[in-house]
Length: 115
Length: 110
Image (cartoon, rainbow over the protein chains, first blue to last red):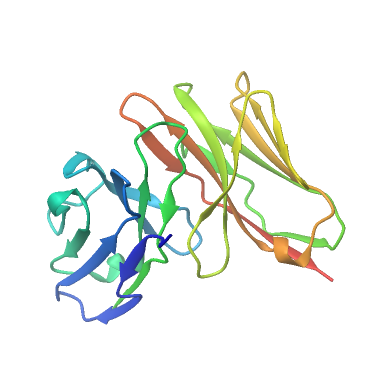
């Protein structure tokens, strides 16, 4: 079974430029997460979807970040404009449901460098 | 203070050693607990869930103390391949939040 697929794996952009990340979750997984992981830190949740509905976006910097999950499958995360502090690894994860004991499966992440 | 805190590390141990990691959480509404493993430049992967009764998977033992809001992971007979970062993860209700600790880095040396 294919895992969570993310693209691109790496992205280098100049500050103030836009950037987008794409995620394809495991087939049948209703819940999709976007996390940001800074060096030496654990992942921090940006947004969580249940099907196509964003149910927790409290940590998403809405002035520059946006996300969508059309048709409740693939998702994109966008940053516009990017700032130097946005350099991090952006991880997408999916789980079968929102249950508290449900394992989340992560993609390999997109490593963003803003210069 | 962070909601989930882990030993700062890094831990440097010889092969065959026993090593223990600790994790504390501050929100008493936390309901489920996990240890994830993350290799360098890789994604986190579930190592094991943590149950109130404690659970063991081969060389790995996880314990939960709800009264003290404390989780532990014990690795016996460490292998070189155990070198990784171990992330403590807490799920809590009231909005279903998943909180990751900052991770503890383990280096196992020959």
